[in-house]
Image (tube, rainbow, N blue to C red; front, side, top):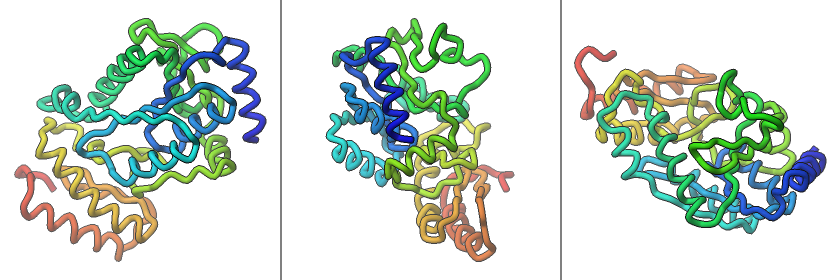
Length: 270
């Protein structure tokens, strides 16, 4: 299946003139963006990776991402967006991801333009399509779509493949990203960063960002050891888990009680 998909990407690139362009992949270190990087490199395209991180990013996943790009022989840029995220998010309502995506997209645009990249690439698959979404309304093949405000075309090599097909492709390629065993927001492996677990009705504050990181980092140790998926919302301390057992929940509960005892916890929160 890999060879067929690589062939399709190579044919598409030649047809629309991508073969000679510099492509910058927005690379999170997750399975989708890792597969995009792998496929574009295997198709012989001129590809580099761009990873954004901040003070609360998982260092383990960042370390894995750096090893992965080194194994591919791909140039890898790391950009710290902590200041931009604080400026955009603090004092506003969540979820944090909305504000973070704005910061990342803006930085990606200017990084690409200032460093001679002509195309941005993302890991969206068919399950990520939303009716009415801007990228899915472009004329022609939705694998390549221009957004005037960005000023660069967006390449999405996986957009016609389902999440299940992407999973099979990644397995065939031997791509196994480091997992923090987060609960995430979907049953598919959709990890991100701990800031997504700040309660959405809360006003975002640095103390909450710190708390979301600290409690979920401790919980992830249990989740990895037990091979279950667990995360904790803050400051409500709601525990979210897949495949949970009473013994595991008791362990997680001990972590939660420790943090609740000396951290940000507004009155009235369960």
